[in-house]
Length: 244
Image (tube, rainbow, N blue to C red; front, side, top):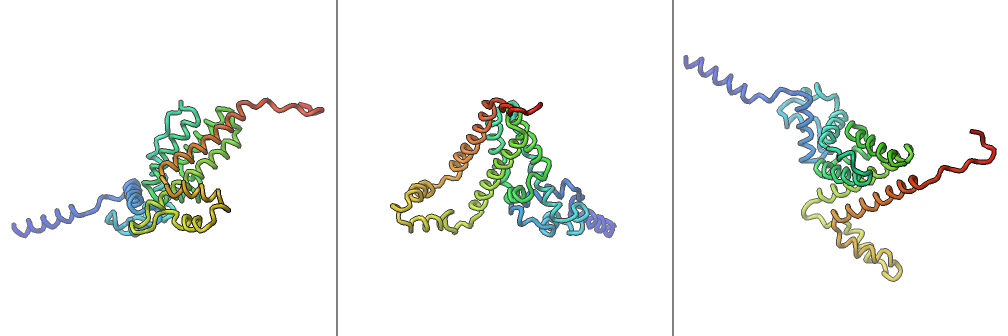
C-alpha cells in the first residue's frame, strides 16, 4: 500500500513540474516578455527555450528560425497598438499614433531597429501605413506623395525612439548622453562658431521628452504645409496644342 502511494506521489510531482504544452501563442508571448526585459538583440532560441522550460528543438517545431521568431514578436508587439479614432484630422491622428508607437518602442527595445531595416513588414505596421496614406490622400495629397510622407515621418519616429532606447539602456555609471559633442563644441571658439554656441546651450539642458515633442511638432508642421499646398493648388494650366 505504501509503495503504491509513493509511486502515485512521484507521478503527481512529475506532472506538476511539467511545463505547459507548447503552442505558437505561448512561444510568441514568452519571446515578447524576454524582449521587454532584455531587448530584441538578446533574444535567442536557446534563451527562449530555457524560459519556457523546453528544448530548443521543441521551440523550432513552432518557429522555423530566429528570423521568423523576431517577425512574430514584432507582429505581436504591434497587435497591442490601438489606432486612434479615425474621425480625427490627419495631423491629430498622426500625433496620437506617434505617441503610442513611442510607448511600444521604448518598452520593446530593438523593435524600431527591425522597422528601420525591414520597413513595415508586419501586419500591424502595414495597417498604420494604410491608414496614414489614406488619410493624407483624403485631404488632397496625391497617393505617391502620401506614401513618401509616411516613409519620412515613420523613419524619423523609429530613429528618434531608437536613440532614446540607447540612452535609457546606458549603465548607471556611464557618462551622460552627448558628452563627446559637448566637449568638442566647447573646444571651438564661440566667436567663430556662434551656431554651435547657441545650440550647445540648449542641448546641455537636454530634456528627452521635450525634445521629442518639439521634433514631432516640426514634422507635423511640415506635413501640414504639404496638405495646405495641395488643398490650395489650382489645376495645372493646359499646354497650348495639347489634346485631351
